Structures are given as structure tokens and as C-alpha cells.
Length: 143
Image (cartoon, rainbow, N blue to C red):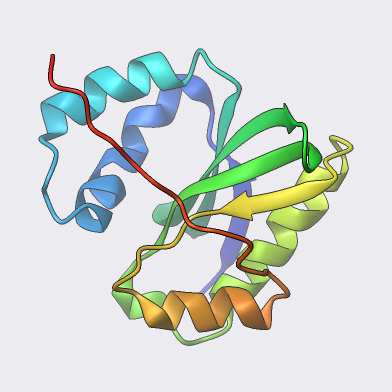
């Protein structure tokens, strides 16, 4: 197997939708995801991918911003690796690649949210040096 990490071009963003769908367990339709990602690519967003030869097997969205408490930062979003590729050190390599990549953009901090019901991911990120400074709250607005 030959793995590579690279930024997915904005015009190819739809290639990540099957992995996003798996991550969200189908809670959001593919049609809605397509519409949202057509908006997302015009914001301060990039997406990194893990490739096994030409096959996309992992992703991490990256939202770039400046925050009063952390300075110039990137928030990782929808981090996902296909089940068959987990527990082989690939996630750690991916996070190291992302860290090196965002350093080239003078980012001072990396942030992310992890689902409460996924304690394995909590251990993974804590082993990489991430801290839990607070809780993420969400209030959906009915339109």
C-alpha cells in the first residue's frame, strides 16, 4: 500500500461526501451535504485527504480563522478514516502531516471537536497533546 496526504482541490470537494456520509451515519442526506459543501469551499476552508494510491480513505476539514484566545488557528472538522485503515498509525501520520502543513500558514493553534460518544478518539487526540479546555455547545435554529 502506498499512502499519501494532500489537499483536495475545491473543484473535487464532492469526492469527500461518501466519507462524510459514513461519519454522520447518514443523518444528513447526500443532497444537503452537496449543497453545504458548495458553500463551504468558498469560506476559509480546506480539506486534507489520505490516499491509498488513488483511493480516498481519510479526510480532515480545516477551518482557518483568528480567535481572541488562541490567535491564528485552524479547527479540524469531520476527521474520518475508513475502518479498514484504522489502528495502523495512519491517523497519527495524518495529524503530523496536517500539523506541518498548517505551520506553513503560520497557524498558532489547532482545535477540534470530538463526539462525546467516541472515547477512543478522545484518547487518540490526548496522546497527540490536545487538551480539553471546554465544551462545545450547539443550538439548532428552526427555519
